[in-house]
Length: 298
Ligand code: GUN
Image (cartoon, rainbow, N blue to C red; front, side, top):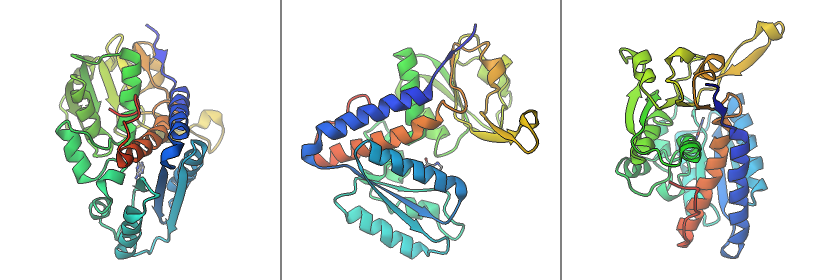
């Protein structure tokens, strides 16, 4: 079997188009606003934040960026967050992670108003998701779920394995799959026979950050593979000093066995910012007592 390639770039463009249409339709109620806070000069974070700002404006939302120096104190950052919490023109707040080492990330994230926590990292949102209540859902797992629902319709009764137990992807992904009535296994670095666990799965979500660690012969014939990994590796075949991006799954072998698979790049990656915009729209609608945007929340 040769897998269908799930085109995340195209899917994300569709989601952003839907967000833009709803922002325009709701203009009479005001404009959704998203604030991004970046502390320090991490180059990858800077690229990501620039891209977020551009796409926020493209869908018709207000975009605010707070770029603070790496030596900003935790107290100063908390003041910025308190001001954004109180700002009625701001409906979503994202503090880019990782934060510099002298800051307590949990404390900072939990200072964000949970209703504006478009990352879904606040402990209240984690608890709401875990108990099946309305919450803000972390963007990357939300994007993965949207792609799975789009491909399968119902996920009910499917065997799903999530490889990786991070708070940002693995754990919320498992909660979402459970919410859609999958039988869920969370595998991690101490899992005894990972190959065996993966071979039984109808859905494989790989989110460990280890280049090509899942070989194609672990994939059950016809399974759906969602590859969250974005790993840069050396590519001497492209020339000296060149690199390329690969996922956590060995794509060339997995594509021969899977029923559907997301590529890297161009799979899950583009969905994250699209879901951030979807979450900002959801937060805006909730703040105004409007119906939630259909198809853009769980
Ligand atoms: N750093 C890398 N990914 C993310 C994300 O999704 N949200 C935040 N806040 N920081 C990140």
